[in-house]
Length: 98
Length: 292
Image 1 (cartoon, rainbow over the protein chains, first blue to last red):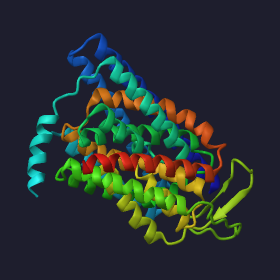
Image 2 (image 1 turned 120 degrees about the vertical axis):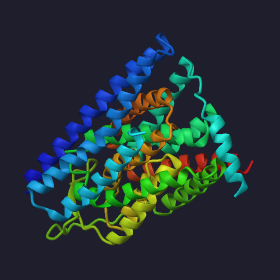
Image 3 (image 1 turned 90 degrees about the vertical axis):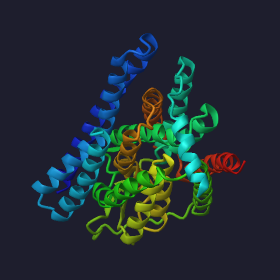
């Protein structure tokens, strides 16, 4: 039980670390290009990609917890994380489907 | 109500992209680093420092500042939690349970923010920061410690204090109170561009039996989802300036790494006094601006 909890925690930690570093690196490239290459459409796309990775990182850790609670058959937590996922998904659709 | 109509028009004008010079980008990175540093130490997102900088120093409209700040808050949350995960400081179950309330509050706040005048938001920010500063000072040193490890309930847990090495066990009490304040925290978070930890951490620590350090780590963990649900709304409305957001995010990521190292060693009472002091200052600045 406590071993499983630690595995989930570690996996969540790793996802957050990778997501943070990736979005940070992409945004740094985008920011530097803004000054090197002002007004170029690619810089805007790189910045958007970095911001999207930033937004997806916490969402991804909710997905992982959701899957873990299903495996553990903890239905209350499946319900809780499921609601959070629906809320986040509707936010993503509203923001990026425009 | 007339001011609401006026502000919508003025917002539309002020949404022209701010010219981001290398100097402004550098200043935003530095401020982001300070926000991330203090945010990581105090278990808050750091938005309470970024929003005033962007509004008072850079001269950004309030909503644009809130959008950038929320993006930076996500970065703080992710990088702080990447480090604290596995140290038994984050209560994942409690975080998940409360996240329903913060995410719902966050979405509601993002939708409300679109209808409120910037001056109203600034006033709310000032009042909010004042209340929290006062409550944080009041609760100094009143930390409940339980050593009964027999039955911690579904949401309770145990953690090892990094300063003393002692194991503390705790039960989560008054869950409805925690849920209610989490909803409010989520709402205020999106409206004002904060993480919302300044509401959750004191409530969890003083009313719900959660030790201060666990409350801070769990709140920082939840903030990523709260701020994402809010930031998505700002993004969808084109109110998230990507260049400034990038600078703020890069800064907070660097700052929060350092803040975590310092925060683990600092005394909780000292952290509370620092939080109250900074909040008091920021609140005064925002109130002066909104009442001008």
